[in-house]
Image (cartoon, rainbow, N blue to C red; front, side):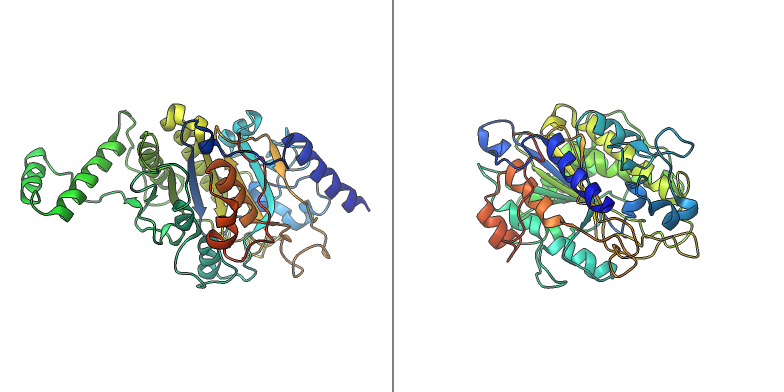
Length: 408
């Protein structure tokens, strides 16, 4: 009975904090306002959602987490406060402030339809938008680009990193950018290449696009990055800085891409995960710093932006023998940005008792990530619901879009 009351309380709390959570609203982009932007960040390796968003008030949490358990707000190694039941990992300083500013929605006990524990298959389902791995060769976000309202850019999406991820592959043309490992060309060499390619319609366009992209990434920022060590939090922070600066450079353009995607790695914490400090804490701090930089780099465009962070699955509820966690199921996700109707946790909390765990070991997912995706794409980006149900996420009519995640 106590568990049932807690679940009802959390559900009602999310509804009350969200106000018109279940009301249908017109998409921002469809109201004649400034074009909205959407950033998808994939956390590859399976983020430990019980560490990122600890349910410190759950009576079974501390015993499962043992030495890596986080404490109530204000205690030594305590979480950042959310709603009195969940907290944020103390490394999430920027996200904690975003929550206080009502620019962050936290989702807990979420998952894609995938229920096994293979990284590769889990990421495939997360990105292809179907029920099974390898069922589709294109990604849900690419398919959504074809349904953006108005007159989108020639390439309405951009993928940042060494490869275009599956979620952005498909029939819609997208841009791509990756950090160059080559020495920058001097002006004379660039001019010679421009002359050489002048009469080749394909190469001349590609060279012009690449030059423009590099100029955007360089931007007006005076930020410099010291050489980072090959491993550790500094290396993660340096990579975030590159990707974030590039993403902001593209999204700041008035007629440029409206959607950006990049991924991060290193979330597979089988051993020595740590608690308030340690391996995972360093990665969370780097992610948090990258989000703070994105807000700064976007400037006024931040008010039209929603950033969603997702992972392929969660990790085991209990700590293993090497002070880490193994592959699991339910996890956490985050939606932040100036366009986000935040300051709340959305969770139908199943509890962490032995009988409540999925297969006796994992957090039981109670929210389908596709409901989150659909809510953002329909309200924030203006993608028609009929396209979401039939094409973007095939055969997903039973998964209802979450409403009220972003401002109208």
